Image (cartoon, rainbow, N blue to C red; front, top):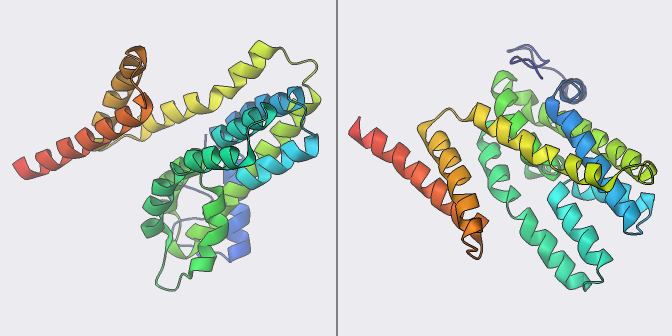
Length: 248
């Protein structure tokens, strides 16, 4: 686990390159670095079993860096789905990352920040990077936040690429049940990290309601159960937070 105070001491402004390296060092001490490695072992094995080359699998991880979207793409392509359908499904999966990206901008930007300065960091935003950025950015000088968090993204992407290669090479020896199990490590780590970082009443309310509603709606076979659970839990969580502020 990363310590609560990241590599650059608070108030010490580093050069952009030094901040990137500090972020990469920090990523190596994050539980997500190893969780992503194990997860992408499963993805690499899946690509091998579906007949994709190791170069395709590795490039997919580097360019997409989103496990669910990558699993969608390889399974649909492996099943012979039209490219347009695959592109639409992957894009739909990626939309979930847009609110995370938007929520991080006020924390990272300075009055001098240009849009192009955010492009590389935006590529790395996934749930793992979002959680780690929320946790560490407040402790990093604002001038270094984009570079530092980009370094975290580079470190975790590197770990994911190595996991993809390892999974592809080990595919012949990796039991199918183990391949499926390692793919579950990332959502489980997201769950525990989100629970740990839920501080506000809105966070806790949405978290508990989401865990309750999602399996209930799935058991009831409601269409778009996950989307409905997320919207309902998030809205009620915000409502509980707003009501508490009004009553105070």
